Length: 226
Image (cartoon, rainbow, N blue to C red; front, side, top):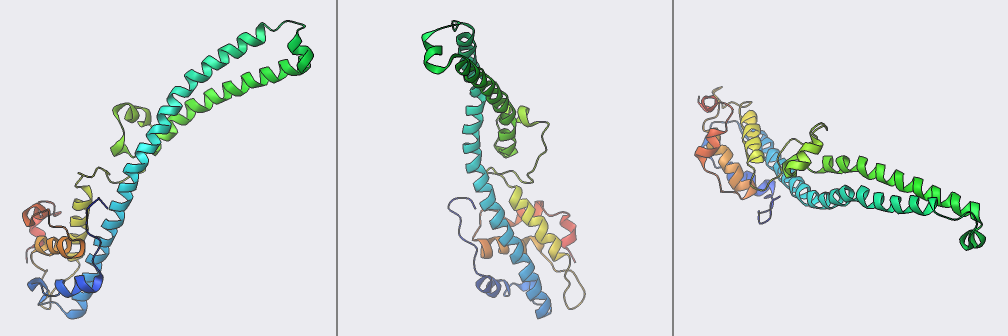
């Protein structure tokens, strides 16, 4: 959930206020209560998704640090490798070093170290795109998007705080639930946008969108008419 937002209101408090809406007066009480539970579940899921999005934004910064570290690791290891190879090639056949460290054992250890550095370089090069893939697509830089272009996208929603994707998702989900219900006369419930606006306001404490803005995102504005 984005910083500064109110917590999800209790279902009891939400239901008490929602029952007073004129749109539900012609509904059977059992149907109305079931609909209110369905709409509340959608609001609760939106809260969970917002918390997930906030975590994704935080993790993106940490993953980017690792990406930068891995990006420069091969260059650093390549310099180390160059010096190790140079050292291995110029060790005298017989030297104080060999006498102290058992000559052949020292050479063998040195070449093993060279191989390990080469393995580290390869691993760093392979891990960089993996770390980039873990950064949510909405948080990637231009270079990171290029690196991850051929990797499978694992995320459904943008995670930018300014994104309206979750709001639009909630509007469409709520409208789909409202489509399932009828009043006592078998007619559709009226004014989807007003009902959904109240769910935002009462369940989530959010009033930063207008009824008209919600209406624009309904799957088909005419479907909420009787």
